[in-house]
Length: 97
Image (cartoon, rainbow, N blue to C red; front, side):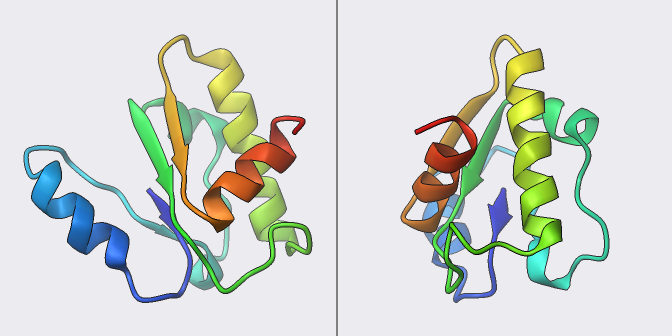
């Protein structure tokens, strides 16, 4: 899951629904390096939560992460993506919407 520095309602809500799944959280504003396409491609699903950030004014780390996500999605036959608010905006932006 990729999230931004807001209250992490996604973990609270999804934890009770998907309690048998393993979650990996990428806290992009506090990371020094973007996850690679290869790292992202191993997941069955990726959830991108809401954010205080604008989807069309991203710093280099965000841009590289979502470019790598697009690459991972194209290379995988079954990677599922879900975005809420900021998440659906970046998915639209990086997938040609």
